[in-house]
Length: 348
Image 1 (cartoon, rainbow, N blue to C red):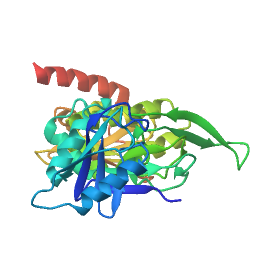
Image 2: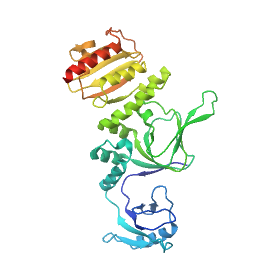
Image 3: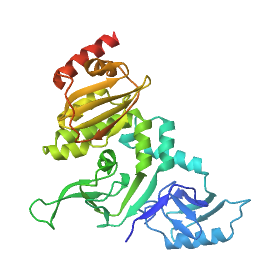
Image 4: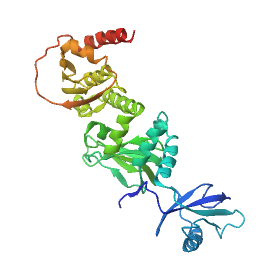
């Protein structure tokens, strides 16, 4: 069984509950059905009412684009009246606004402004999974970032001793997210994710996810904070280095000092490329230690101290095993402490 995907593009019509008694199926005021004739999608995680559907078909038969509104009540709920009204679907920008309003309720997005939320809403797709349906498997390429809207998922890791055994690590519920690590690190997925119950996910594809973290300082800082914590709690140095490989972000959300601390804690080796307003720069790192730096006319320690003053720009880490000569003799810990003094002087 494949997952059901509903792009957030406007259907032709919508059917909204405008009066709600004690519906046995749990319909509530303002619940909406999305209609893209001949398909009809009920409210998330609520069943379709066959009796209401019969009346809806009658309303659709009488639909007139010049006078599209139609109202009817469910024929089975005499004492607990449930009334529906048929409307033309809102335009795409109105749908995106509705989705953005829903995102405000998620803790991950509370620090984002309306413009940022609207941009994300345009990229979101709903994906529905049945109970026990696999969402991600170990080794899959990172393709989507997921936020649980309704339902729950179980995260499994492969047993180290038994090849065909998987151990459940955790169960995630509404507002929890997953899939971000493989997108941040460019590494294949390291866990298996299975729907614990009927589950609806909000999904952002890879390009939309990277656009989101580039455009929002709050989101950028949040995800790289997750990455830093993940590295600190991973004891295996090889695994740490895989987590770091290929990461990129914004200096406005994550300072150069914080970035270097991530590389030091993971004993990473590679080249840190920086694009700042003045000109591009590179820092060569080996085993978590800074070996050399180049920034315009500045080199090594002087270049690094000038770079820590930069508040804007972008960075990307390129993992490499190429050996280079160490030109900066100061240990990286000492370099970071001295750079903090430079930053304090720069702020006064």
